Structure formats: C-alpha cells, structure tokens
Image 1 (cartoon, one colour):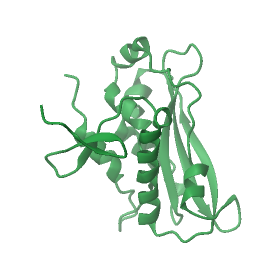
Image 2: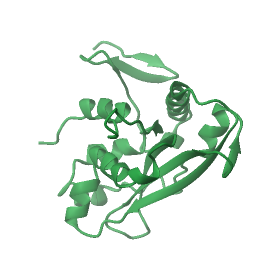
Image 3: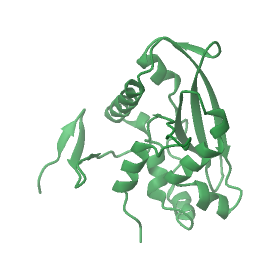
Image 4: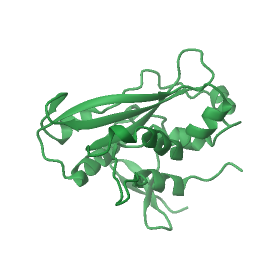
Length: 203
C-alpha cells in the first residue's frame, strides 16, 4: 500500500479534482497540535485572501438553531444548511465585511445538538481591536469544552435524518468571508463545496 505524504505531521492525498484531502483522527481541531496548526493555516489563508487591512475592529454575533423537530434537523443540520442560515441573516451583512463559521455542540444529556453560526463583522468604531491575522484567529476561535460529545448513540440518532459525515466536518470548517454576486446573492462558500465533494453518502 502506497504511503501517504504528510504536511504539518498530517497525512494527505490528492483527489481526482486536483484538491487535497487531509487525514485527521479527531473530532475537533483542538484535540491535536498538528490538526489545530493546519486548521489555523486555513483560517490565515482565508483572512489574507479577503485583503482586509489591519488594524480592524470586530463585532461578533451568533445565530443558534435548536433541534426543535426532525424538519429543522433535516433542513439545517448539513453543510448547505449553513448557507441557508447565513441567507436568513442577509440584511445584517449587505455592505459589510463579515466572516462566518459553524459550531456544533450538545447540551448535557440532550439527544440532538444545537447548531451555532458565528458571525464576525468588521466595524468602523465598535467591537474589539484586532491588530493582525493571529489576533483575529484567536478572537474567532471556538473552544469545545466537551470533546467526547459525538457518542455512538448520538450519531445513531442523527443518522435517521442527516448525513452525519457532514456534522463531523462542520467542526473543521474554517472561517470564510461572506461574498455577494452582482445580483446581491450570497456566493457559495468555497471550502464548504470542497468538503461536500469529498464526502461520500452513507447509502
């Protein structure tokens, strides 16, 4: 069997579409130094691609989706559902520079998780002063208190309604800038599309 190449201590392979898939053996970036370093590099790349000029001021807000019923889970608890939530907040984003990323977290003894979409928006005079890329990465970091929340029982319960491979991938999605096309519609998030292309359906 051909040995995989490594980057930052993580094995990776080249996909048919020309992109690369990194192999990780944890549920959250913070569980491995190599994984966290690679994750931070992805965020650094996205921040630099946005061409924002530091120092900046950032404000943050969160839109939380609670698993009220199976329809809510089926509609939002997938990678395309993230964009649906961002679209529902469109009025707050037009004319602004905003980054987003998801968080999946279970409350104690709950059967299904909450889905949080974090928004980080540049502001003229409000919010936290951010001097450089590293400070922005730290400001926007999500620390999971419980890294054992994806139990086999919880995954089994979710599999009735969604592809749980997508749920697992959400915790590794880096922040991405919200971009608009010429018609004022939100453009698909490129990293989200790449992840979807690499996910196999469980049926």
